[in-house]
Image (cartoon, rainbow over all chains, first blue to last red; front, side, top):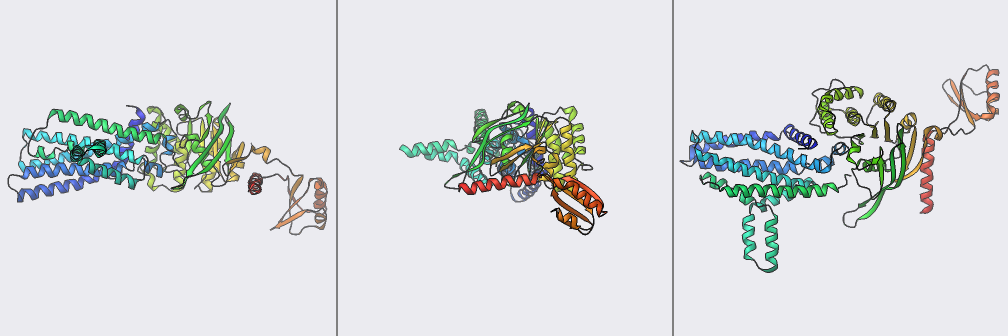
Length: 258
Length: 313
């Protein structure tokens, strides 16, 4: 990797850590340990199911909130605070800045997810006292969650490259919600006809298909995940993130920093 | 060789929410700055100084025109390794310490790893920042941040340094230190291009200045030439409380301040004035020719521009 991109990414990561972003882990740990103790007392035989569902959903939601709320400020905050001036007046290309910021945020989320994953496994061990082979499926769900984060980061960065933080947050969050129902949207598109079908199909394929990444329910029921889905989701996430990042670069390359 | 050649750079912004209308921030600007000189870019607030600097730094894109820096196209990324830039009222990543920030900038500027920490230390000392290890920038005063700003601009030993209002936020001692630093940069063979509206700084430091107002270049020249316009008058200062009648008779404009008197009169009457003071047994302090100050030149250029604009309207 280009050294300048690595330096920008590492500074972004350090900024997130010093801005106490990883403090969310404390809230996560409290939530999960509280839930584990609670379900241990009120449920019979489904403790594991509840812990996996709750734990992975929390990992996903915590990460998405971080991805959106840091991502939307990555570029606009630098312009507003004018910290960008002293970066871009050096031999740093604008695309390097965008890619570095993206990798820094993605790195933050991966580290965050790693610690939360430890929490999920610890809670699981607490309620079921041992690990079984099918628990490894949780790693697949975590991998899909990380892929989701990559897409969200890139989308937040795209909006941040031309819009205010508030509007970027609204756009990114809306896209996440719509994307979570992308399969339904595609189903709706297939039921329509004529021009409406074109528009609905276009919209359904334009929004990120997050529903394909949600395997939490099936994994909680110890159902395996098809290898093809892992390959497809990986390719889709990288393609979508690259597309959103390219859009961000294209806009940022032509933006006047007033 | 010219360190900077500005070839008709101009900038028009579109302002307004619905009905966008053009607003010209910079009229076509032609300007050369020679290598090794300290060049002052003067103008009142909102004159177009910062826009010019942002154009040269590639932070905003010109509507027309181009520029060459150190003999290369100004958009060439390699040029940026050889220039330093201090923005006006700089902000930095406030979660970092000064050492971390400078180390980060050194990395981005391509300073080799072995040299980095030594360069960071020596630059911080050069700008007068000591005992700040471990202190995050959020705890720095405005003056300290300005020093950090100057440090990051010179950290990578650039050939050309752009400083936008470098004295802003500094106390008198800080201003003096920055002035000394700018002189030192020149003595190291660097070119310094700095914008300011503090004319005394420009007069004390610059080899040449350009005056800009309302986005247009109003005047340019060597400070020595602009201020050497002797108006055929001299200023005499002597010790005393009352103005002798013989001095009044020479038509001198006299001002009494405490126990010193300052008189301005025609150069041709210099000998007569000295004789008059000798006769009165008064102690002569100094005789100096009256020069046009940079301030007077600046005000004249701005007033001329305003008059011209008024006539055209």
